[in-house]
Image (tube, rainbow, N blue to C red; front, side, top):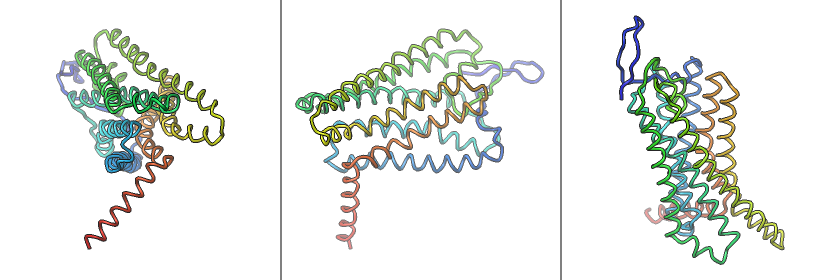
Length: 322
């Protein structure tokens, strides 16, 4: 894929790069943003890696809920690495170029991870539904085979749908200005670069949003209607509290993910300033991967207990080695 533009004299030129305008207007504040994002990036990686290691090292956490959490943390690491390192590099350089191939690769990864997360959150909601509404059948309905199938379907939907969508977008010819008014290769700004009819692509984007993003959300909503209904029927206050605590972390993650996505959509629709749109998008990209591991560790007694056991084991091994 090549980009066809024009030089100042109107002659046709051929290039294989885009220019991500990003936060160029911030000038010297780009250094401040770089430092803040670097800290967020490192904490995000360490938090999600810690969650994965804790679950893998502690057999008490080898349950369906934590199986899905490992998938979610791995997904967050991939998603963060598809956007933030490129942004950090561009905040330090004058010329913020990206090859069309790298732009396409980045879009593949961040769209696949975004769509897969929607499906994984729905699978996790189903897990909580079975645990609370049908506890006697939980072992059967959420066997390791069923969990692997749900995770596999989630990843398969994300990969197949977004590979098709991204490949179709980058099969379009690009011309005119090669400046993308964003800090990463998102679908809407890249489609604006195309010098062909993009109406069919826009219909596909809308269809993917309705079926594969709103669809899982409706499944999550239905699951929690059943969960809340079951919890309210429990006779004791303590029983209701314990039942709700088993799904509170997942519910917070869902609210955070879809809430920020909604704020991003409404904010971009209501704001005509590219800088405002980019700051809203930046929050949507950085906040969920940063907070998700904190939500699952700080609010979860099992994870905190596993962390203490792991630390105690490391100290014991250190003493033995001496």
